[in-house]
Image (cartoon, rainbow, N blue to C red; front, side):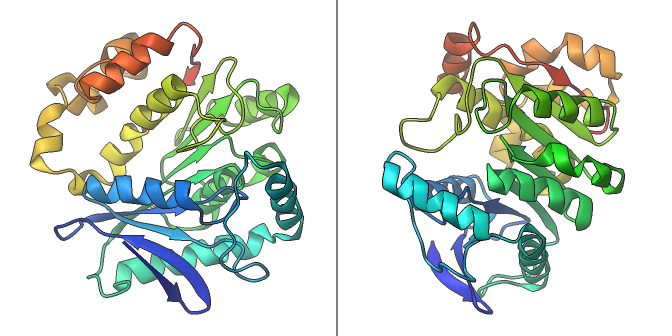
Length: 293
């Protein structure tokens, strides 16, 4: 786990103990490359992935790390958000994708690359799905996606979006537009989290909802399975039931019927399953499930 640079851009690189066969780009919220984002990278590295987080504000506030639970730092983050050029941000992500595939920071080339983003990073994950050749993307409470639905035709690889229905930055009208624009997209899966707010999957701090975060984090195994499967160790693959491993052969409606069983199956640890069971009464998901995810 180390901070390094890619050109003028700061990046955090967390590598597994063995050679990775897939990589995950972690795209931060508006709070910079802070401890929570680095912890997410470390967690993915422990699962066998090369995890790389980029300093999205490197052009005007390099190295900034903010705490959303501190009001002054929250306001500072909003200021950076106003300065940020998302079009340039996607180019940064594309730079990281290419670097990973050619060999990054002393690591060998990794062909399979996915991304996961939060808040502003969730928007960038959507944009990366539409504008780059990334193998799979996941966005948590992405902002302003409703304003970019015209790009959805270009999404060629799996994209999963986690949408908390009580998100005070992405209101009901925006959420409805996202569903109207993406529910029927063959490469997109949407999950709603009733009553949860923006930031519910933060790694640390007051915003985190444990049951919701565990459920969402477990769900995007689908994207990993279809796009980054080689990175799973034999031990990880052994934890997944045969029905889950073979579910790609099921029709869409059959997968929906099995969804509860799969969510509570071996794809989650016993601790994670307990968390999902404890929270399922207030995390009632809607899923527009695609055969391609």
